[in-house]
Each structure stands twice: as C-alpha cells, then as structure tokens.
Length: 272
Image (cartoon, rainbow, N blue to C red; front, side, top):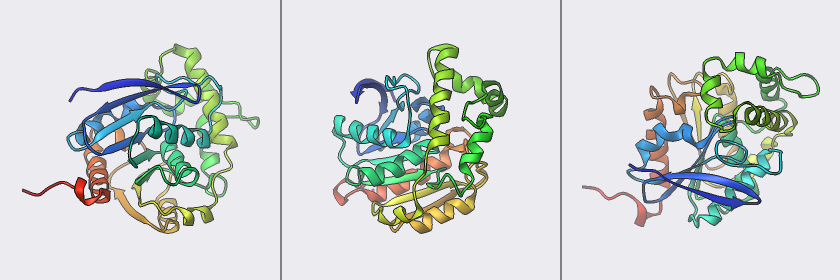
C-alpha cells in the first residue's frame, strides 16, 4: 500500500508525517533517537484496516526543532496540535519507549484528544525506578549530563548506523539530537504514580517480556495504577522488538485487537 507524506507547521516546527491506509486513525509515536520510518513493518500489517499515521517527532527524522530543546511535555503538546491540525477524531495513539512517555503526558495534559491509548516500553517515574540511571549509562553522560558519543555508539552497537541514517544531516545533526535527547532523559522529573489514577482513557499497557530498559515489574506497576487499563506482554521480545520483522506481527495483532474493540459500534468491523 502506497504511503503519503505531508509536513505541518506545529508550534514553529516542521513536523513530517507519513500515512498509509484508510479508516479509523491510528497515530504511532516512535521512541528516542528514532523516527516514524521505524514503524514501517508494523504499519504494513495495520493499514488494511486503519489510517496509520507515523510522525517524526520534533528534532527527529525529517522534522525540525527550531527551539533547540526537547521535553516529553513538548512532544505531548505537539501530538495534541497534530491531531487537531489533521482533524483526527479521537484517534488511538500508540507510543513506544519515549513515544510511550509522550503518550502518558498527552493523557494528562490533553485528556480529551485521544479515544484510546497504547503505552509501550515506558514508565512514568524516572527517579525511583532507576530509569534515569539507565539512560545516563547508555549515554555515558558525565555528572553535568554531557553525553559521550563514542560511548553511545558502542552501546548501540550495529544499530547505531541504522539510527543515524534516519536523520538527514550527517554527524552534526546526530550530535545535536543526542544533546537534546540527553537533556530530556536526564532532566525530566517524571510523573508521579498518583497521577496515573486520573487517566480514564482506555489504555493498553504493552510490554516486551525481555525488555532491558523497562523490567516487567515496572510495567505491572503502571498497569495496576491506571484505572482503565489492559495488559499485554509480548513473548520473546526485547526493547526493540516492535520494529523487528521477527516479532512485529505479535505487536501488530495486539494493537489491532485493542484498537478495534475501542471503536464505536458503527465503525466496528462487520462479520461475514
């Protein structure tokens, strides 16, 4: 199915969006250091039923970021503005990793814009969970929060070149993205778990059972804190699994099932 692309002005940033298919809207939000292009294998499995939109978050991929800084609240505000600009009617918003954190922020900052949420590979509390320390270790950042690019390359291994290729502009663009991301990861205060009780939007908490970033115990804690949550755990999957050919079908099937059950009756699929 052919893809369509557009670029929208969202609060001064040129946000690039790719979409495939037609029908109820699914908005997929990628993780840190990635772009919407990473969702392509999953999009192909969903575009027969949904209008699947994959934006590049500001500063990532083909989107710009004139402000020169990133934060999860800013990404959430971008999503709300994007939903409005595209005239989407309460779409299902799916986020993985940094995208999942942005979706949690969206649910709190703009509770009426999404009809359903999928939060995957994310956890709201960065401090007591150890997630901030995990990010610091990945970046090789010093106490001032300055990342070590060579250390990050070594940590990313073979995926480093794949990630860099997602962001046109070469080494300077990559270095700037890392600088902005480091600040977002290390300075973010996180969200209190008590705030999760105020999110009443139907939410699928999606986990990978071998996630090296978000242990399953944290995912269970998030699931239990959300009043309208369901839980799905993908077997044999690590933090990068939703974008990999070997496991993408599992994630696509779970997201499809959840999104279809959240549709109003008139939009639900008809039987034979």
